[in-house]
Length: 331
Image (tube, rainbow, N blue to C red; front, side, top):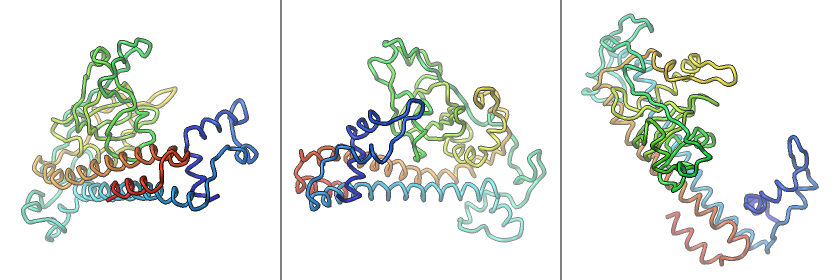
C-alpha cells in the first residue's frame, strides 16, 4: 500500500476511534507496532490508492499554500510595525538627514526628525507616553452555567474560549466551536463584541491572539479590545505580539499564571500621533483582509477534503466525478 494513502486512512474518524479503543495503558494510553499493524484499513488497487492520494493531496497542497501566503502577509505587516513603532526607523533616518526608506514624502512628513527622553527611554518627539487603559478599551467575558440548557439552546450566537485558538495558526477567528442562546448571552456583561475585536487569552496560557471576523461573545479566559479606541485592534495585535514578555511579567497566580484587566490596563506604551497610526493601518488592513479571504478558502477546502476522505476510501464516490469536482474547486 502507498504510504500517503495509509496516512489518509489513519485520518478517518472510525480509524481514530478504533485506535482509542485499542490503546493500552490506564494512566497514559499508547500504541505499539502490534496494534498499528492490526488497524483495519481498506486496501484498493494501487492505481486507486494513487488517484485518491492525488485528489486529497491537491487539496492539502492548496491549503498549505494559502496558509504559507498568510504567514508571509502577516510578516510584512509585522515588519512594518517593528520598523515604525519599535525601531523608529523613519525618525532615525530623518534625524540623520536621510529620507526614510520605502515611503512617500507625505508619509515621511508624518514622522518627527528627532527623539526626546521619556520613562520608557528615547521616543519620537511629540509621541505620547500613555497606558493601555487610557488608549484602549478592554473588556472580559463569562461562561453561562453549562448545566442550564436554556443558556446554550438554541445555539444562536458565537461564543469563544481560548480553546478555539489553541490549535489555530491563523491571526483571524472565523468561527467558534460553541454557540450560546440569547438567554445565555444576557449572562455576559460584555455582550456580543463586534467583528474586528482583538482577543488575547489571559490565562492557561497567556498570549493567544486573534482578530475576530464575526461578532462573538467571550468567556472569562480573554481580555478583549473592541474597535473604537484611540489605538485600533489591529495596531494592538502587533503591539501585544512585540510586548508579550512584558505582558506576562504583569501576570500572577498560584495554580496557573493569569493577567487580569486590572494588571493589564496600567502597562505603559507610547502612543503615536493618530495620522501615523492611520498610515500604518492603511497598509496593514488590506493585508489582513487578504489573510481573512485566504483563511476562509483554506477552511472551505479542509471541509471538502474531510467530506471526501471517508467517501473516497469507502468507494462511495466514483473517482472521475470527484476529480472533476475537486479540480473545479482548486481553480
